[in-house]
Image 1 (tube, rainbow, N blue to C red):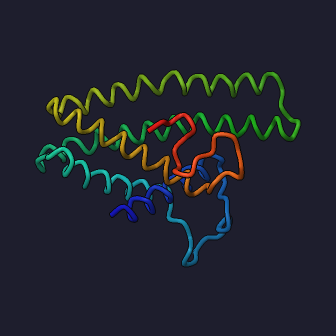
Image 2 (cartoon, rainbow, N blue to C red; image 1 turned 90 degrees about the horizontal axis):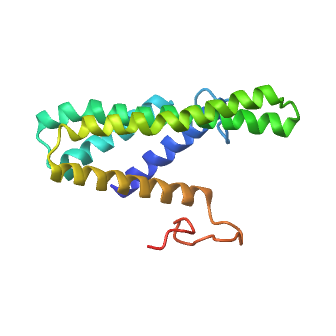
Length: 185
């Protein structure tokens, strides 16, 4: 089961990162098919949603009726998070490209900075509203279990991404266990 989670998150993160730059990357860039082809982003997100649904029902002891009501709300929360991350990262990547190739202008950089700031300001509001809608479907105990499940999934995603990136070669603060340098657990 842990292996399946790892594969799902690697695929989701790889697809998300490539989409955020607006172009495919890596050894499969530009390939349309083939046995090693990455699944489309939407398919990866559906696989992650399915994984979450299975663990939601199990972890929160949800009835089938509760799960049916909760899943659209959880999908919306995750879609909102992806949408804001994509908006922010798309603007950041454009700024990076323009600064690197010398085509940056004050006006265009100001516009892109505003896009980043807008996404950063709007995300917490949207996430709070999504959490409120989810909380309305759950008991206090289930709300706590949901927050713990979210934290565990986030922690696993970070570990998987750290493992995918590989060990840093002597960089300051590098850790062998995949946790960020400030994580003291």
